[in-house]
Each structure stands twice: as structure tokens, then as C-alpha cells.
Length: 268
Image: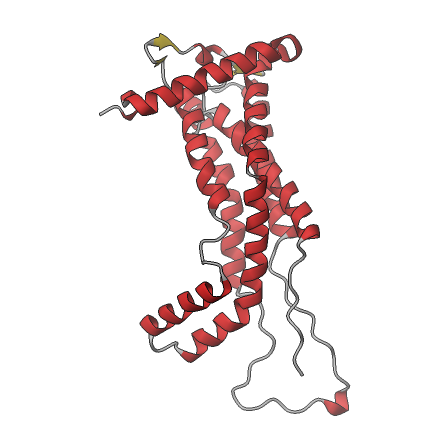
């Protein structure tokens, strides 16, 4: 079964095709042969601009998660031997605070169909019964419908293509590394008491909580997953991913200034 032949999906793809072709024709006097790539960048910026209110909600959700983190840790300690009770108590806490564990995931979920449509636009030879002219469009001589993995597998990869793929894929990886460094979990700074006044720790007591090493590693890996995906999807979809991760980084930096992270009060 060809999912792209399903009438509602076919109509969406055809509408996106006409929009992208119209933008490419509009930009062509300025961008020349790179007009379709520039149109993809423009569409990405429009989508991300429309999601700014969602990004604000995401920033607020992050602050709320930081606020209730100590309460969640206490629930996990208290009900560690009763998973069902722990789940109920955690959901009750989220409900009482007016948030949820999935708060802030909407930007990612909304963009999944957008990436899917761009992917379809550059793999289908025909759209709504007419030839797909986008397949003949290029960026730096590389067809927008080709992928790095596809060119390597078919033996059509040329050194000149390495520049285009390198800018997109390594650019995504670089943004991921900057994001990982800027937004890595921070350990709260505790006031240092005078040596003479420092009491001996109670048996079984733990020091200040630090981010688990496994969590930090997992977050770092996830940041580079988009770069791996860009190796296998059409170059057009890779361009979309590059622009959107760069936008996400800039937006998070701005929103962090507007909604700075909550600092938990230090305890004696």
C-alpha cells in the first residue's frame, strides 16, 4: 500500500509542492540554482516562528520541572518499593502543579509531519499525477533528493559533494555539541562552611545531588542523533534539520535569559 496515494496525504503533499515551487520561483532571481534550498530554509523559519509560543511554554515547563524536582526525588525515595504507588503519587503531583511529564514535547511532535512532508517531496517521482520537478533541483551541484548514504551505496558520491554534505551534517553535529555544553545539567553551588563548624556526616547520608553520569551521556548522544539521521535522509530534509536545530539553540539561549533556571535554596 502506497501511503502517499491516500487522498488526504496526497493533497497535503501536493499543496506543499506548489508552495515550495512558488517560493523557489520567487527567490530564484536572488538565489539562482539554490532557490529550492533557500525556499526550504524559508519554510523552516516560518514553521519555527509559528512555534515560538510553544517554545515559551516549553521554557516554562522546564522551570516547573526544576521546581518540583525535589518533591519527585522525595516521592521516589519514599515509594521506591511500590512502583504503582509511586506512579500515582507522581501523576498527582504533576496535576497539582499544573504540568505533566510530557510538557514541552510539542515542538518536536509538530515538526515530525513537516519533516515527513519534505522527505516525501524529494523521494516521489510524481506528485498528484504530475512529474516532481523538485528532484531536478540542486544545492552546490548535489541533488536535493540525494542522501549521503544513498550516494555512497550507489557509487555516485563525488568529492565535490563532500563540501555540501559536510556543511549540513557537521553543522548539525556542531550545533548539537554547543547545545550539550551550554545546557548540560549543572550542580547547584553550595555554600562552603568553616572547617571547624563542619559536622560529621550522619551514617548513610548522601552529599549534594549531582547529575547522573548516565543521564548526561544520554543527553549528549541524543544531541548527535539528528546528525546521524541527516546522513540517510534526502539533502533537503537535512537542510531543514540543520536550520531547525540552529533555531532551537538560539531560541533556548534567549528563553533562558527570559526564564532563568530556578535555583533551589541551599540547605544547611
